[in-house]
Image (cartoon, rainbow, N blue to C red):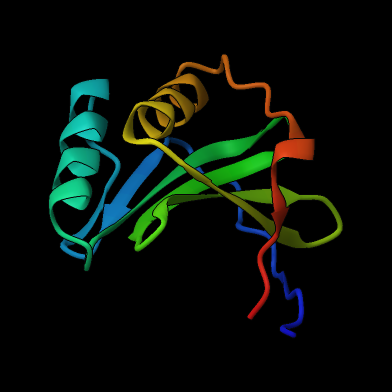
Length: 118
C-alpha cells in the first residue's frame, strides 16, 4: 500500500499556467486547453497541468494523464500543504473539469476523489 504525500504549496502567480511534456506557457486561451487535452488523449505519454494564479475552492491546480482504465484527473488541494486527490473519468468529464476550473466555475465534490498514493 502506498503513502499519501503532502507537497509544498505552489507560490502565487499573476496568471494561469498551462503545461505539458512540451513546456509551460502563461500565454493561452481556453481553446489551447482543449488542444492540450486532445493531444494527451491521443498520446498516453502526455500529461496536462493547469495551475491557477491562486487556489480556487482550495484547488490550486488540476492535472491529468491517460491510464489503462481511463483518464486520471488529479486535484492539487492546497491547505497547510498540497495534497493530491484523484479519480478516473471520461474525456468529456476531463474537459469539463479543466474548463470549469479555468472559468472559475469548478466546485469539486471531493467525495468523488481519493488520495493519490505513491
